[in-house]
Length: 266
Image (cartoon, rainbow, N blue to C red; front, side, top):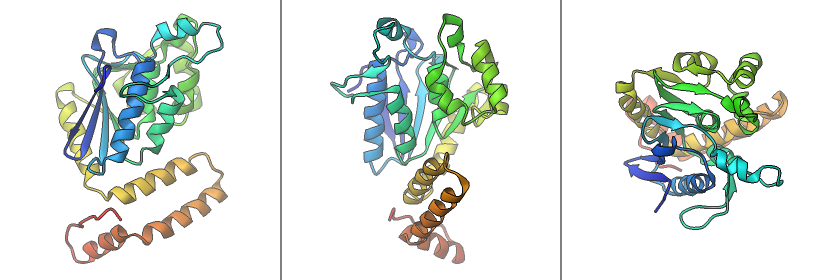
């Protein structure tokens, strides 16, 4: 179905794997189009409650396919843009970032190795991220005469300004432990525990109401850049909507009856 990614549904979890390990899983136009298609598929599948994004081999992703940038070079075009065809849909890296905020299901990056440049951007665009403790992170674009324009939008929504600027201005790589301290990832774990830790968190997320999870994530991304007053007004309206759902009534009833809730997704 796909040529540059793998897509597999295991119970309530859809696993999306960047699958060009020989090239360090670059984010080229075809990969982006396939990722967009896979996110659409996961969103439409009611059985899927969580999306795990990872890389094949020893690297999560080394970032954008530099050959795509070289091909654009001064032509005024847009690098990393899929034109569709096959199991893809047209779109850019911008569309991919936006799709991750609109999929309505928790996205969890399983960082199996180095996440650099656009690869790091993909990690921070996910809701949560767990990394192997020997993974490295960085924005090395400056070293080849580029600047991480696109991923600054997500990086600076996760890290303090001066620490983020140091990262993009030097191009230095940082450890998983430092990435945790900066807020780039949720936590790091020993490599041999990565699969189990991601599986446990995915299982925990999948056990929640899929409707309330979607409503909550939609509200989070809708209000993240709002000023306080309109954000509070929007969230108040969303709370009323949540309280009107069958799942909210079920959750409150189950709590009072001291039993596990049975979610209906409505």
